[in-house]
Length: 209
Image 1 (cartoon, rainbow, N blue to C red):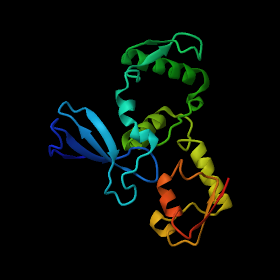
Image 2 (image 1 turned 90 degrees about the vertical axis):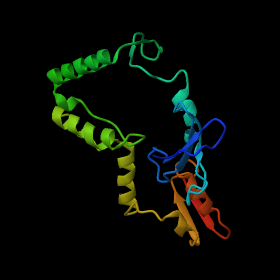
Image 3 (image 1 turned 60 degrees about the horizontal axis):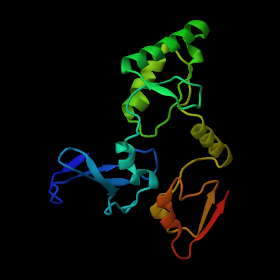
Image 4 (image 1 turned 180 degrees about the horizontal axis):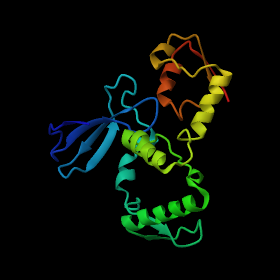
């Protein structure tokens, strides 16, 4: 993120410009105000972004609660009660890594490394976690291969088999359409920035679920 250190209020807040880290097609632009201690005090969408125009979803609008909530998870926890009971005890990072290593080694010794199936997807992971370091680890261990996730790739395969491709027009081009056919999705949930382009006058929109 590039920093703008201009004083914006008596509290000496600085503005940090960036983008949302979630794996969405919109890449919403963020404007975060940070105090002198480096703590974010507000987050909002950038009004000058040509597509998002200051809009943020309910998840990102409440990012400060997610980051600073007193009950957020900060340390490794071990379950000490029945599954679903919510009974956990705090352990150290070394204990957590040792326990995971022990369990993995036991599985490999008894059943082979292919019994470990990595499951992950983009989410808020960066390139190091999502596409570099983890791949090297799994290859070194010799675990089973998986296309990162299950649901997304199954949906992509279905689209290609039924429709023949998964290319989508940009929001700017939708305003020239006479008919917009939306099949199997509710746009306000996964792609809300698409909605203004679909709601222009004289636009015929059909949603099939």
